Image 1 (cartoon, rainbow, N blue to C red):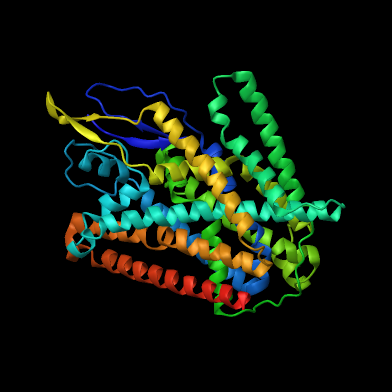
Image 2: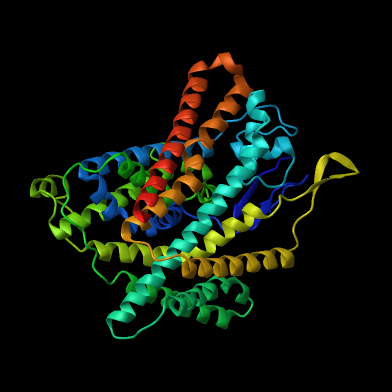
Length: 473
């Protein structure tokens, strides 16, 4: 008997029974998961890559890109690595991934990332164990901030771009009407799942909304991107932290990586040698680099020797064309995924009751489908409405301020996910398995990375906040 729980497409699926259980769920091939991973990582953050390279220079930008790519890949690998936890569970299972083992030990039907942090840290030293609940709620608050910040920035940027376009062709429109029109289109796309019982209407509405959003983003990226002259290395320490914060804002969320793992036909493919995770992160990191440097190639503002030696195979196509294509593909997933992630963040965990006939088998109570559908719909409407209010109330930022806001959201919402929690969980797991002295090098490595992650979080938040205050002044 075993438990294995995962989230697929917004549904919590339980595999808990005394008999053999067959669950009907859609499994994905590796190439489908690879496409989803890359598309989910290319968004508004990729739009700011040309300006990011302009701020720090080509050499510094390349170095920071490689550091970020390697660090984030290692963080993801720590969280999804197989057979990492082997404490004696209530139900003996072999070859079980870390989250599933946590699920067994705590007898819960599902282990989202926030619970994984709490349950994992509960097995650490006493000083960390007492803070496990605090870290869980901190994670929820940070990720809600990340999702809401992304929604607001996308809405603000889209509204400004559409307003500018109408002004250029001779129509005087205000930001309120533009933002409202944009949010109506986005909300109609968000509510599509509730028309699935009417197949013709569902297909037609999906086509209409998809085409509308693609046209909207085509208009957004129709204008040229202006990049000034740039040296190979420039900027100061605040520019470096701002560049790294843009990466934190752009990279795929951890909960989506778990979703990809659970959706694979062979989940172990995610972390095998030459695995899907490494390939996806390598392609994503190189996509950020190409998008950033294509602006220089397009405008011929880097030395020709670098263009010939490093980017000989890259044609001198316009950078906004690349970005436009990436965003058009990404928007198909964006708004729905943000709201769906947020619902799982702020909705309480499912309750677990004991079956009186057999205390070893938990009796699972689910959220009813109508209640969950209502919660999801209300959350989507709330997100859309709040994004509209924020974008109309906040003054229009300049290019530099816009990227600083993006970097600040990246640090506040995603820095701990990528730089602190993975190493803290591994530290606690190693402590529970082997004690503090059996593997001192692992303990020391994790403690160093946790301290470095906290330092980067604090310095990055301070740097981009100082940049924003300086721009306002």
